[in-house]
Length: 315
Ligand code: CP
Image (cartoon, helix red, strand yellow):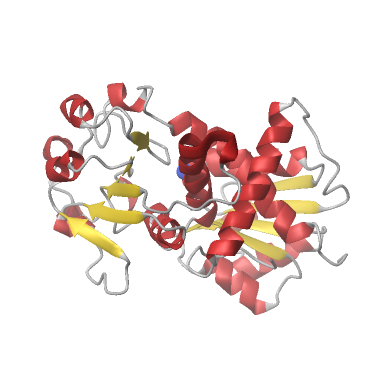
């Protein structure tokens, strides 16, 4: 694998291969082996033009556990504030030596631009671009679902027949897009639940069902309910009724949590707006996989870096 830009282009076999290597990485970590020598001599650059807690730190931990060197770049406090563009920023960092560049950018398509441009000779991983995709988040979500369902017997399996309900601010969510493509490729049935103003206008080609009634969707007893963050920073005023109204109609509150089957997983990619899209009781319940998702993210990103770099020709 040269780059990881989307989940839309991943085949079922490729996705399962990434999840299976992530299982290997997780089982090594669970045996308290803190470091593998696999990527010794490689350099990973985290190139973040947007804020992040989980993704950036997780990629850093993943690279270090594989013995790669890591350079972290945040646009805030850099020469981007003086007008330096993506090409010059990327080439400057690549000149210091980069085998892989992990890019988060506010502009949809920025990682693909970097991958297609030939500006730098490094594998590119999309760590979230605008409202487009966040492929490693979807991979860690799929990994978490598969592990909860199959435990240590998960290797080689997809998510055939698993029902996943994704709720909330779909229109702005790169997490939702990446999950729709990946989870359905793995055989899951995906239902989107949102107010009409927070759904993309054109859903043709999306392999999903759509519902506008969260209580009805919960009554179906989904295997997984994935709550999305309301992305206030991307929100035009017209999209958003008001916090109380949103929480009443679209939030996973305590009452809805009681209506969910005890076997349903409650997922959220984080960061959470507690009390808005998810109640504190739901976020902290035993059904919640929020922290498992974070922990699994390291193993999944180790697998992605391994797939990108282990067979790479020395640059
Ligand atoms: N889920 C996720 O992408 O979180 P961060 O923005 O903290 O990286």
